Image 1 (cartoon, rainbow, N blue to C red):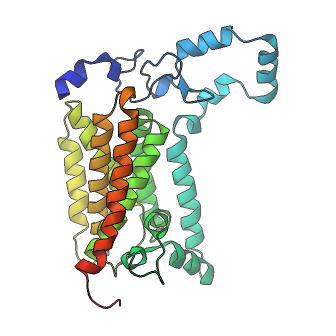
Image 2: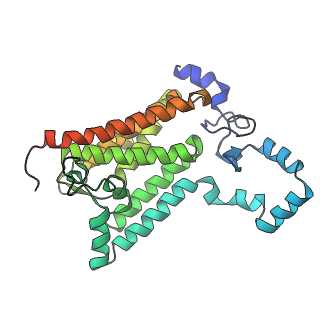
Length: 299
């Protein structure tokens, strides 16, 4: 499907706000709805019209139970967390772990040493030091308040765009796969380097925005400039920035974004899951290349 075909297809836009692109469907009527029109249901989200019909069909017992056990639908709808639960949860967990990590003395150092990433730690040929969780826990620890603040600000700004567009599950999947891709590429290039930070996953979200925006026929020059400048900064001497994670995360985000764009239809949900799982398998298999690319003694 070309960009023009995608843009002409009304199913790719919120039925109540035709100017807003979304990948989320109402679980009752299966129409596309944007972030503003989404209300959480027992499974997935529900559009305003279906929610209105659902409220009108409630029994007196259901109305009584809602008044007793909830704050009411209006209070829930006004909650910022409701709109971006994945983004805010990632930020909250990351901030808590990173602040604990920065506690002076042995406690903070222990957290860093347990969660930080080093390429050799995911080498399948070294079972005595194999600690695969580090490929993702690296996203939770940072090199200081400024490093943490910039990453979380970037995640919040990007999450406001992508999470409502992709939906919670797809956004979280993108974030984790991009983070994993950043770690694997770092290990393939320099397995001795110790890395901290969520930059790889954040670059992945930028990569997904590039692909999806381009697929919609939008102007991606501004995004490319932002990504390019941030990549170049990673090569500045003396900054100690893991540019390998940035490149790897960007690659992961481009791949996941392409998968999402190509399997946007509900009928292709199985294909989407299969392609995502296949890409994760490729990343895992790539770790077997670490000793091939770096056949020297572990430092």
